[in-house]
Length: 334
Image 1 (cartoon, rainbow, N blue to C red):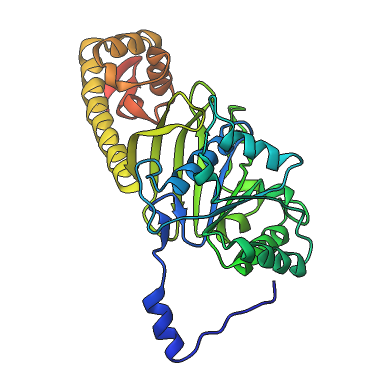
Image 2: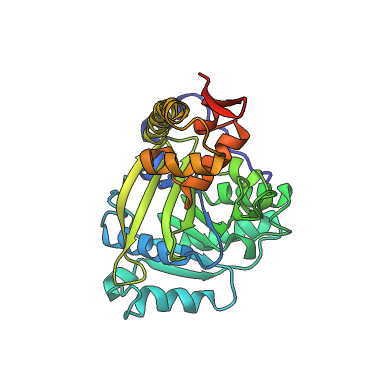
């Protein structure tokens, strides 16, 4: 986008006094540009519906109140049939949401085309000006972009268009999933949709992760507008019902991690001293079994005895860092 806004003189003072809270919903939605992303079928649209319903009802979302009233929400539906799907999800009842007629009066569903030019974005801005929404949701991002979402230019054009709308925007997209080179386990990427520009162009990001059942169970929120936070979710009867079961900031998570490391280190030293004194002739497998039985906090793997035996064999982590073999016998080494 080539449009620019310049603010000068006394207008800067007025703008400072009128500046919005950095968050529309603390820790979850920026007052400017937010990216919500997760793997396919994880429950992104369900969370969006719960969010929209809470905003239109003036209710807290995941225990958080909005910083200002949201009277009208526009959802830009990029997929074929997206308008009908959102209409059913938000007003269809049953296990989905069921907005009342009064609540639905604040909802605008727009069949959004691909935004190929700056004029397309400006035309969309003019269309939205008629309804004057307090919040705009784009779902999914990939169906509105001009080009592959993996390309930096595509992301740059999208965020440029978002700025032109002049309203808080929540963009919903897919996370990149990569296979670990060693384990083959599939995991989320630090670059949603394959480009770092999706990260740098947003003020706040929320990654949606599945729990062991394959359903949405964890939100990881971070950005340049506040402290990172992780929310563990529980689900209610309706597909759009989510509650916060546990909450942890980055500082709390790091502190807990440091505490666990200290505990494991202390236990590892004690365990190494014990096995070297009581069972110095034990082989790695036997030592692993003995230590797993006596020191249950030493390893949390599915097979702790095997994990401990491997640590002793490799000698580079856990109790293995404090053990050496001398003439075939285990000896303590601080």
